Length: 270
Image (cartoon, rainbow, N blue to C red; front, top):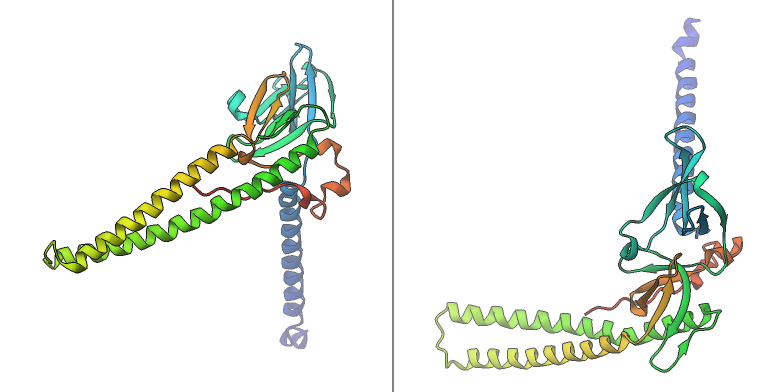
């Protein structure tokens, strides 16, 4: 027995058990992160619930829990459309739901502002033409691709504005240094710095004007959507991050490999 303890056999086994538990905890943590994290990139089906009151609600089912009375359950819907409703989520008692289904035409539109919009496509409008007959997913994809192309010059001009702004700031600091040193206002160095600043400022204002004109042109690319109650909402295409119709997507379509077809426009820099 003394030899057993002297050779440290119990500590070897204890270390092995501790290592096994550590690996198990780490593996469990990885699984939890994957299950909860990958769900963000997986398009959830969107339900349409018709209530006994006659109202219709569209949204993703987030969770269920027993009602306060303990009779039945209540369902939390992510209804989005914050600019219309003022809230993103809504609880509805299951007993208040007359029917619930998952229509293929329900569209999720991810926006730069106000979060997701849940509803149906009504019209797709471009400066040249208008599409008002279903299916509208393909015209919308083409519209967003065109907007992405139109936004690229705005991105480049934004970068140019940054360069001009840095150049003007550098000249301004040089001017302040000369003024601090007491250089006369008629000094050639000071005059030249101010002339350079004026030229850069002129270029800066010209680019800003061009950006404004281009941004105004982009507002002519837009879509009209309708919420569950039929209320129509106009959305500028340049504000759309991407769109998809989750109920019409197969399991393979929802996978990250196939999910790349969802449009992700270039962001505008003004």
